[in-house]
Length: 352
Image 1 (cartoon, rainbow, N blue to C red):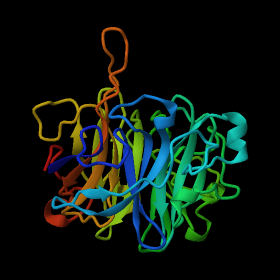
Image 2 (cartoon, helix red, strand yellow):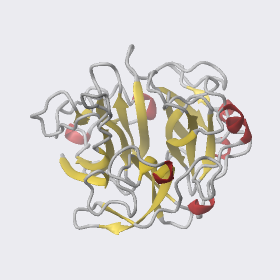
Image 3 (tube, rainbow, N blue to C red):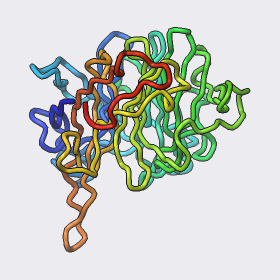
């Protein structure tokens, strides 16, 4: 495992032009082949806060190349700061969301990649709760124009999962993991026809033993009593790989899991812990980590992950520090021991 340091936000050099504090940064490919990183709340200064005119409520940033350590080099952001009705915002909200929360934050909540297309789930939030619901946008070649909501995709906060990630597998189907944006739920799984992936009412839930009819309740695939946050579910070297932030109280770690089939992602072997805050002397220590997004082009031997960090502490007068607030690149060897996934093969729980 290798920590390559912050690539965006506090302490990043050179970081993102004009943005000194950033998190998330999931990378998606535009239809024309360019790569962009999608960041959440960003600020012109090197910490959270400052004038509203310096606050980006999500922003797409082009990746113009890689440095000698294979870290992304960022170009000028496509979008401008400001609220949901300002010009050049990345995620213009649909009317249903605006009716519930006119001054919402519009934040990315995971993506689905299919053969030639990518979709991002967006949540309308206040205080990081998805009060204004969620909707899907299709990634286009013009992030500066804003990615509009897919018609009919909006759902109220309690009407559908508010955080997702998925991929189209070699069998042609799309496999999706899901939880809640506020990190209060375990992970469930769905299967969808790629032609209907934006219709969440048509997703087939995994019931624990088979794929159920759309509309049925999905069974958690994560352990009982656990809760999760940010998700990244991709096929890497022909195998499903899940990077997930385990938000269970007392855990708080970014995990990497590899399996031979999607539904076995929690049953194949022990996770690799890419980042944790419990053991300061460990090589995978990162205070207050979250996120965890697989970079395109990763392999099992060289799995490149973007992990965020946010110091939520405050000084003696209760003023939040607001920093560090950034995104790090971490490289993990995720190839299972013996390269055999038979349900019993294991990899060390500690850093590899």
